[in-house]
Image 1: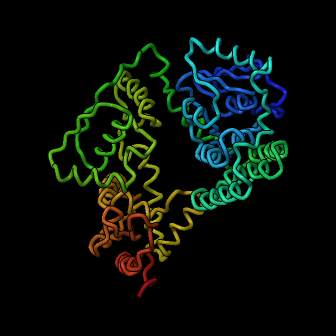
Image 2 (image 1 turned 180 degrees about the horizontal axis):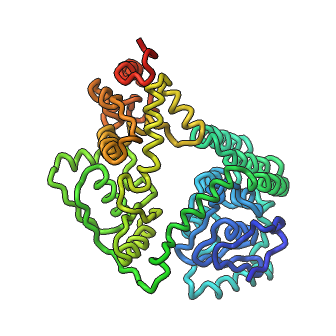
Length: 444
């Protein structure tokens, strides 16, 4: 049930509440979570009352669009320009307690007291003891224009570096700026125009596909639709404390799961734990592959994946499973381009301009050369006619380059600084080309 107050001027088909949200007498009651449209509607009310640990956020940028229903305008007016940009750009979800500290939530009360307290707030608003606020007209939380402009420019520069191929990030900042300069109502009009354009964009279609694909992974025919009930997992044993084992253990600990880690080589364990900070191990990567086994075990792990905030996929027991099976050709392609004479740094630059977070050669540095060489060996045995074997990484190691963990790879790594191109790499690549000679006579 929802009664929308008159100051919520832009309601259309995007204003969808994702949680049990009620609006009465100019104040909103938030139970559980209010994400996207739910929070946008709530921000249109004079006051917001929430239960403890209720989740709040505007995650629309993850879907290739921007917040609607005045969300880009009301959030800065409730929490300030800087905090609003941080929440919007990161799609960050906060708790009701954090929301109260920021000024987004007026009060946090127990579920038992929620209706009673909200009725008192409603009476106070109706009888004039509390102000009936039009959020779009508030300016007290917004930083001065010059300061807000500086905040917006910093955010734009960050977007250019991290998401250059995602137009909706810059569009969101432009809409926020319009509201700060020209007023909330002008900002809402621009928001509506931009949102209608973005929803038809390639980025939005692609990100919406990813969103629904991730949600579909939790439903496995014959497993999640049968009468089985999942068992609670309270303790996990990890065998092997290498890079992957240490990463898995870290992911579990971060989710407050008790872990027993078995590793016979103490030096290996120590080295892997140090590498966690600089590599892309299991505690960072979102995907969790579940190798087909009994239905009960698959169901248990599907539920467990949600607890540790991973996206689960069920795969058959085969070389590479799903991730490496699809990712291996990408890395092989980069290796082949290098041996065909394409500059490795150009490959990375073009890859990131396309939309990849980092290029393949920087990824070699992060994941570790030995890991990739072991993967190549496995793929060459399973798929000899599909594997391109190059001595490039072996030559890199022989020349003292082992990747980010030791500070020297295709790039040079120094603490607190951005990676720099390694000037000695072209000579190593040239030597590799001479040995491989994909096109005879290309290099004399």
